[in-house]
Length: 248
View (cartoon, rainbow, N blue to C red):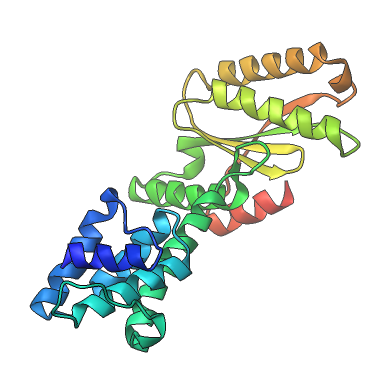
């Protein structure tokens, strides 16, 4: 079954699923041979094709090749016609493909493309976990975690500010490298969510010293203004902290 499907796909001019997609391919073949429901295997196939970078057109062409060989007893070449595939099978496969693409898009959106820092949306999600953790321990989020803002006192936008923020992000990732969350809240404001440890104050001072020295070393960035680290009090619940982040 699998070899005939491969032959039909290649004959239609589409690459057959790669080796790492074998589980999805095998699941579809097994379902076809046994006459089982194809819903889950086809959804998995659509997702695996999307994850390997194949577009929807190519995915549906694979489905057409499968449909052609599934009802063909000979070993000869068959014609893979997407228009001949039942709409229900197309819908299942396309939804699996679309869900995977959507998931990959969301995954990319947790990081700011310029600085590589997490987004504010990711920080809100992380804070939701922190508040749930605090509730389970019968403590408060502010007892367990510190929210530090890092603000660049730049008065103008443009190239200097962007370069400075990339530099700041690089320093923060280097200093806060033990599972802390660093997120870009505004064009010139970063938030750090870190567990309260005895070393936290020293790490903030180290980061500030490194940032100031790197800004001073570049003549184009010397007018960006001062860098300010400030600790914010985490309020009582998640809704309040979301309002705080929006106001920072």
